[in-house]
Length: 121
Image (cartoon, rainbow, N blue to C red; front, side, top):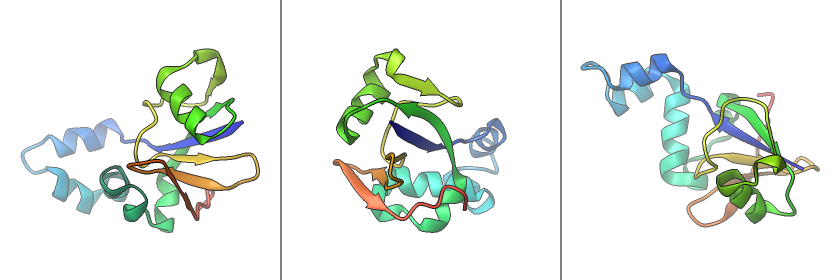
């Protein structure tokens, strides 16, 4: 079993980024979780910093054999292998997957990269 963590962006943040005073850069300055999301989604492991862990929420558990299967199931199913905890999007660059022994991996542009991830940060 693997646990998937994603950064959840609130409606308030989406509204601000789309407002005349918003935009990506201003929103990243105002909302640290948006900054973390932009850095990790655009740059994967290269953009990840351990202090970003506090912005991630557990969204599901996935019953899989390995990380590649987690990615496949998180995007294609089958749904019965996903135990949803919170609303989630398909697994993509910047998401974090934690295995049963507590090792954490960020979804990178190609594959996965092991990271320091303190899910209670």
